[in-house]
Length: 511
Figure 1 (cartoon, helix red, strand yellow):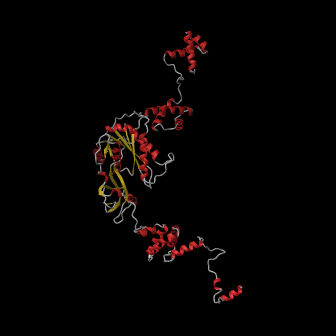
Figure 2 (tube, one colour; figure 1 turned 30 degrees about the vertical axis):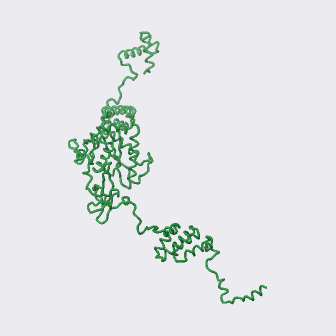
Figure 3 (cartoon, rainbow, N blue to C red; figure 1 turned 90 degrees about the vertical axis):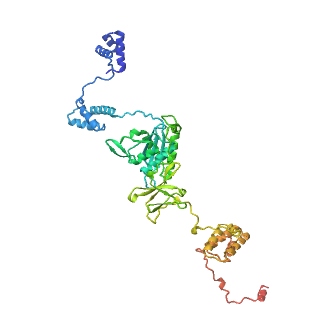
């Protein structure tokens, strides 16, 4: 087989001489070779490929094609070779591998789905899908991912489950963030949208039909098991999970609460919508400002039929009653209207409470089932409680009390402990402490009052005694040890019963 350069030299020699033999002598080849390449050039069949030759595997190719088609192009070449040997094939495994590779290539070209770029009009299409969110306190979460086709604007919201109320609340929030509703909403065949298929036709969920009618949108579903028909939202789910779900690739830590996940989703939305998109060369938030003019106006009141039973939070207690049980809600909702529904069944049954604010429906509480007389209370729903009987702190009500408490923390501790012990004449002792604070330093008196409170010494002379002891010992502390005892000695008992010497005798001895 001649190379391309050799073929060009042969043809150039023929064009120069016009003779097969002369061109063969110049190019160093046979005149028959020159004639073959000249005739191939004149016929338009000049090619660098070798001429096709019959191979042993040719008669077995239909069987190889059958196996490749049956396995959807996944069968291995060594398996094909073993099967061919059983059918009488005597060729090499190398020939089999080449043949299987060629058949697989032809199969892929014939079965590959060709995608045409989707050019959408402004305000026409919105897609949404779900992704598995991170676990929080042992409970699974869901990432609701929406994608506005023309502007490529993305909204990712965390939700607790994929029930109709949660989905409707998320869609309402998405519409209000976009500033309007699109014409079409495309999604998967979830039970919240499609209840069954009859003759290939999707039967809509009545609740979704009512929701779509309320917002003036048309809800469509893609073909089952065909994610390519809504690639925009599939890509949104992919990047949202890669960034928000804790993995080794993003080094994100676990979420301590659902509020932390909501904050992370807000940061993700801000990041992806403010950076320049690689296709449009514009930021989605800028394009949304233009597309918003083509969106439909939203109703003033959200769709609340699926949110459950209406309840009004009392004006002074953030608790609502539902089916003989009481459940707490955030204290900021005092006097507000909420919707209560049940989610799950059995031991996993939960009571979900939703409130409507300016951003749309928001889940504000989720509790386990309560029984009569045993309410479900979340401490985070209540403001800090005022100081009660177990945590009362001294508060001055007069100038004398303020002057005593100004001594320091020791004075406050003394007042609390003395009052608890039922000490008498406390005002007199407090006035005495104020007077002593003027003679000694306030720090010393405060220290003495603290020690008196700790050791329950509330008698009249206890405070001066503690101060005198501290001043005489200069803060020294006597402790027992191996060579020292705190027990009083007997030296004082040696002179007991003896007469003291006369004063004159002492003078004479001295003289």
